[in-house]
Image (cartoon, rainbow, N blue to C red; front, side, top):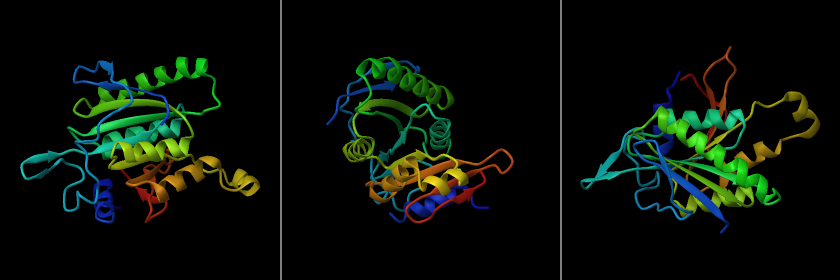
Length: 222
């Protein structure tokens, strides 16, 4: 059974809406830093060829950090993807960006009360689990797919991680592919970075199913 490290090393060789953001420092406290985060420390995976994806590379004496983005919401599958990205992709000195996209149709009063709390709680959890990784949370209202694509490009994201729900055979027969599955597929095909769909297996099976542009439902035990 291949490990996450060997699988992702293999992959690494292939390839304006209102917003609020927070960044957690080394003391796990957060500061509101606005919506214009800089991507100057990040590099694309094509520039990282030959480097260990699970460590910070060094190029002419400069440490190369990567930005890992996870699209989050209140669902359990998104939280599983967030923790997988934190433990399997992000390393010391890397920046983990949690992006929560609010639907344009959602009332501002609802989004202003729930979304910051969700972003804060998830960011604090990540920082507590892995203090050596910088954590940033973004809350943006807009069309989900377009918002994710624009932020990937704007922030020069190296790896985009998306949670996937376990499919329901009964619902798939009745309704076909769900909107959430279509969203993940569109991101995998269209995002300007390595994009990984992550689905946690049941307790009896264990591990994760990983989908990318090149492989679908690849089983990783760890």
